[in-house]
Image (cartoon, rainbow, N blue to C red; front, side, top):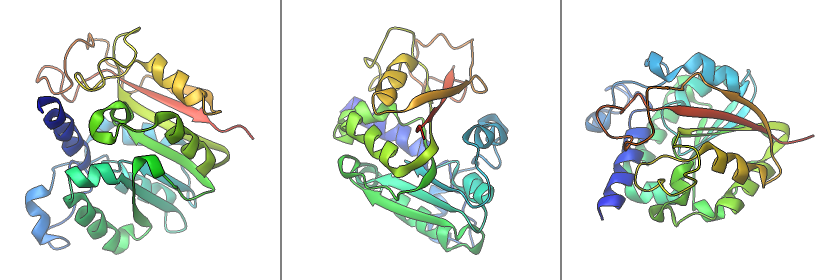
Length: 245
């Protein structure tokens, strides 16, 4: 139970730190409102992350377990683009308020290009022809019990199928120590970058680029990401995989 509560807390931190909703837009959600997202928190390196995805006006992007980058993506792709805020049913079950948050955001004319999608993680049917798919700090959760656990190979194949040729899948997550594999995903909420590369490449992707923009050499990878000494300062990796074509 403790592990399940910790996983739920991590998801809450991911989801409800994002879309900033004004009181006039969603007064009933004031209690769930969080202080910052990628537009207002410089530590999230919004410009660098958006550039790493290569987003441009008119693009279509899916944000899996959508949260802090939804508004930034919305602005990057503009009114002719589309942001699919994909909330797995398993996440909505734990945090049903995410539905109201995303619906309120998409009701704002400034973010009318945002559309929420809710599906079971093991029945993921993403829109096709996507330019990019993004998952932030939640890839490791695919391996955890509260997510099913997810059929990770099938998840990665679904992402591959949804992308247009040349489209990219970007994974941002908390780094674990080299050689740890998947053993800490449900305890420290970290994952070995080598495991991510192996799993995603098995779906047909080619590793296109890595970024150290969110790296932190001072993080020794031994602490839970909620530990006050590392929370918000974890060593994070950023990987870009490309669909050949």
